Amino acid sequence: MRRKLAAGNWKMNGTGAELAELAALAQSHPAPEGTDILICPPATLLSRAADTTRGGPVQVGGQDCHAAASGAHTGDLSAAMLLDAGASAVILGHSERRADHGETDAIVLAKAEAAIAAGLLAVVCLGETLEEREAGKTLSVVGTQLAGSVPEGASGATLVVAYEPVWAIGTGKVPTLEQIGEVHDFLRAELTNRFGAETAEGIRLLYGGSVKPGNAAEIFAVSNVDGALVGGASLTAADFSPIISALENA
Ligand SMILES: O=C(CO)COP(=O)(O)O
Image (cartoon, rainbow, N blue to C red; front, top):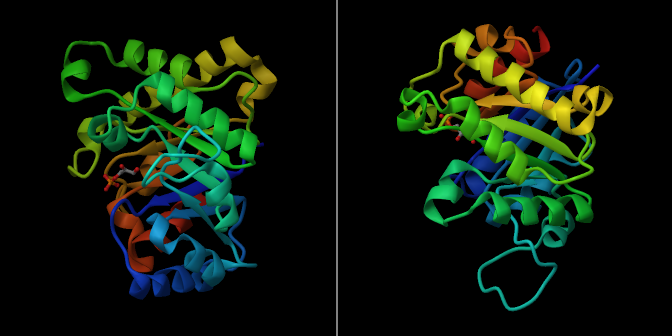
């Protein structure tokens, strides 16, 4: 049985004052049932976030890492540095990184390999644009991204896949439950083809894109949805806590 995962992506939001939200989350969910909680703050907050949450139910993660272990890469962070700062996971290939930093599937793959080698859980993101959906290309797009971004030898212990339709991120627009289910069933089938049923069954599939307290429960009832990757609604404990509760109860 897969453990569920409520993951928050703070993106480029948060300073020291917002660490109080992590403490509040930990207090509200001291022993979340069958559910892991992960918050990915900006890298500037990572070690303080890890100090704030140490020993409690909230894990912390990075939002990106470089594929190299160290070296002349100004402004970048290696997977080992994230681990050293207290991270247990890292988001990779988010559509904002694919768009803002030209990250291709091959780049995401190399980062995922580095993250897993360093001992981090790789949360690999994929998803179609509105144009691709309207052209009927959703499954071929996410299938290509999955094949190109997920490393050989991945398993539920090292990999999470997050389906985030680009047009649903930060827009308040959410696919229908049928559309979410179609993609998640497809991703599970693709993982099964590649890794075999036993391994594929262990890999968690998250939905991301305008998940809010008001729509979380219905999304978590969709087949093959094992949790969410939440942006805006993960920034405060008041918003994220009911989403965690909805997942616990799913
Ligand atoms: O991109 C996302 C999480 O990685 C989703 O963002 P929102 O929840 O703000 O739509």
